[in-house]
Length: 400
Image (cartoon, rainbow, N blue to C red; front, side, top):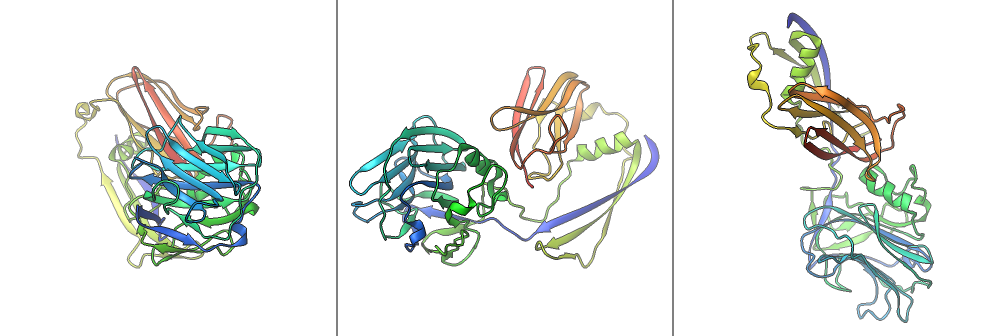
């Protein structure tokens, strides 16, 4: 390596926004006072992100009904033991649809995206963007003036777990819209159309649970259907959307090693600063910018100890990202490597690597484009490596 210097510039941007959720223990709930916008009769869609802690029986996600169940309107629930997610509608005299998925179910302590739709003729249930059950039926949903309960016992038991991003529409969302909502997570605000999602005007209730404190939840649909919390606790320890929290910025050492080796330098000097932003204005740190120097000239040229011991595919960084992200992987021996990007349906979006590589720590960068160089939409993508007999797949989230 040449004894030269490369200057690097690094800006670390922190965000003060935190994504909150609400934790239910089976004895608490949210009550939303009745509003005409929630008296839905012809078509409906219900969305919820849930991380259940107990699915031994039916667990209510939300429902609008009388206490004695004499006149239900609509109910969404989750259950285990091959029960999946359930959806009930009521026409005032009998259930005209009782739909339960038997092919897929939420997993304990893992986030799942539940969506139930009814367009006036067909009812469907989706889990994580995939349709798992459908039923053809015709009927009119009963209208009642009672509150909407989120997490409250009615059919089955109260919710036991964490919930986020509850939404209700007065139309049946298309499968493309459901997939768009699942892929985008919280980066897509349901009150604004984006991509294949075109139903923001039909949004009647939207509770994002981002208040983080207090006993009220705000309705982001604009219809004023705010809710009162009865016992549920604010939760910041986990989220389906991987928010930016904390103040640590990590660069794996083998990334730095690769950059310096490629540039043929032994000394790298960089400056960096911290900028806080609320989306409208930004403030730099009072004691920055800072300087970091990496001197590799004293390192031994013997690289035998740097060869990985096993194949591995690491989590991309940063994640979430926009528009580029770095993917690193380990090769303990020379191998024919293929590394590609796929959507959640398994369709290949782009090939990043397809050739033989020597043993070592390797990195590559994806710029969020497809094989033709076109930017792809925001959402969850998979990246998969195959090296000899080794294969591994990981997820990443592209934001726009």
